[in-house]
Length: 479
Image (cartoon, rainbow, N blue to C red; front, side, top):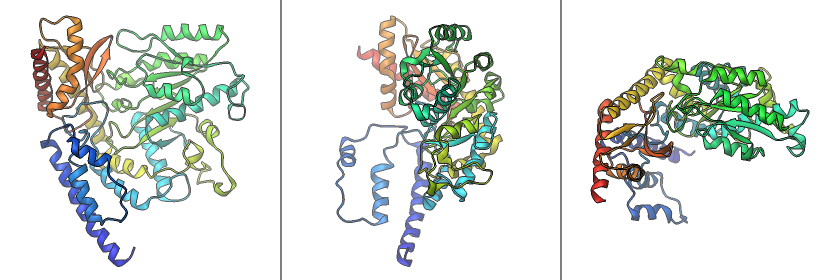
């Protein structure tokens, strides 16, 4: 960088810091989300490829006027939609520094590689999972982490059957069967499809009344598949389902997996960090017995997107699943762990670890645990408020930080209630005061409020319910 360009960058960097700080400071007082102005939307969609470059200050002006005013809304304390968190300030700052360094975190001897090993160990410690050196890596999200973990499970199962899946593929191997529930996230099915297992080989195990996997039904399904000549190899349990936040009972599932020599994978994308709340930690008993866990620091921890994590008990199995090292990249790191690119599918990998390190280090374990406990307490309080309101109905017990409910004004039959609650999420969103999304539970349309933001207060819950009631009144009045 020349002296002139260096000064230009320095000035623009200061402007960027002020712009971002002003944006974050203004978020709580603004609307949560509003539809974009059609003209503004088209301006972004149809932006022409520039023939000549523009100055950094000009670019920041466009960001300020055309981008920042149209957020998704997930930075707002009254954003209760999906499982999208507000960005942790420390992570925001670290993202800029990581971008300035811009390494490939495939391997080698530079700070990001060693920092990733440290923060993966931190994540394992946070959720209480055993962490052998090399037993995990950061990914783009739980979808990719699930592919990594299931590939390792597939490799182990094939090897036990006398098959080298890396050399011979799956053709000729009896069908490998995995077991899931109706609440299992779609990323598991995608992983099964991409790994050549086929979604038909994912058996849906009945769940109990609260949505947990039934170990008795699981045992019966395994026996049926073995008798038919298939190869059971995988069970996917959940540390917080997407719809209601239900946590499976891991101990009996782990007992069965151990007896049957099946790989136990836990989808902890959103909910695994709930183990840090002493009030609900008992629900996670047995999580440490899993063979692998996939989770998302970019959810409950607030690490800026993207950042998932795969944790695997058998580091050598993980490395053996992916390692394919050309001679020009062969370089053992300290401890003989090899490069991260030997443990997953990516060769060029972004510097994700700095924002994870900054986010966790800024709050510390105690601060993170307090934030999570705050969210779960508010979710339970929301459940109490819903249960006490004659115009609302709680549809599931509150186990982590998701509260599922519906509007139930008097005088409507089930068909009308379903129609109302299907229309409610968008109606509430458009009002701009809160953001909540919908789902379907046992055939009933529902509202699903997910609390991830430690800045959310009980007053925000009151606004949520007031907006739901108001939008429901508007919708029923139009009919």
